[in-house]
Length: 395
Ligand SMILES: [Zn+2]
Ligand SMILES: [Zn+2]
Image 1 (tube, rainbow, N blue to C red):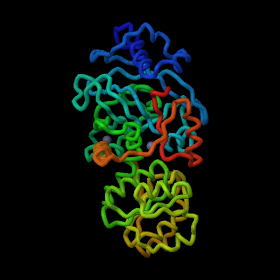
Image 2: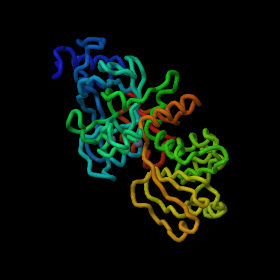
Image 3: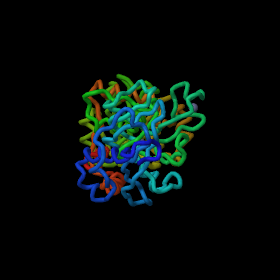
Image 4: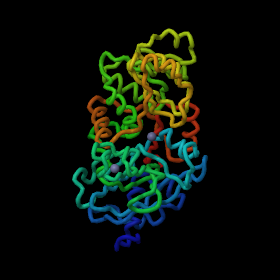
């Protein structure tokens, strides 16, 4: 019996639904879904109490282990989702490996979430049971500051709540993310996923998609503009697809010879190795906009030199100190170095709708939850085309 309702089968019912989803064999063996056989088989709209979910948590910098977590009882505006897919973002690796800040283990990462709605609070208007929703990098913000009122919840002056590893202002404790089978999120922070789309391929839009779409919108990428994309990983490949969809003339700068052909297939005019000094020096200062989607710091000035007067390089990748900025070179042409991080909820809905209308998805490789640690290593080794997505049905 769960702690928040009078239904003696409540937690067990959640496990049973999970059991139906995954076919039971793997996780049943772990003992985490004990009681499933005697549980109820259907959830009802009245079932709004707290629920248990299976999660795959980082227990230290390099190991993951299955664990059971509690999701809160639904408030009036809350949506509960059974998670179907969750992308693996390079941010997850930075967080687990304490490359940005100290970690609190166990940590359940994951902020590229696609799920099926299984329960809604009484005041929910955006979703019905059975709808598909998406959750990105944040699950809450104050709602009244100037940034929230301008649809920039990610810049909330009172601090947004990250989907994981963030103080949970509603339930207390720390938020836990999408490497799990279920989540509860207030409906405002759940994105509507249009019917008929490739759900696994939509998951990365919730972070990689919005992170690259937002600067392309802000700097008005459009036909006739020459746009550069540095780095062809999860973010970079979305930047290419989105910039091409907006009609821009796209050049990709990569360190991976094996990714050049893929960039052309995505619609880039050319894809060059930035280690090729001859090729790098062959460009004039004729780029209108460059998106840097590299997860670590790298020498920035060779790319700043490619910008037209007044043009902008937007860093959406590294959060480290920018390396090698040369004021002499940049001041003379009034070049801009800027940055951008995810985007607001309305803009996240916009990129999902933009992609759904055009058949754009991320290129994904599906994995099982027990392959997360290996996938992390492969991402760091640039051995993924172009986003790992955890398929919860493969658990
Ligand atoms: Zn991310
Ligand atoms: Zn706010």
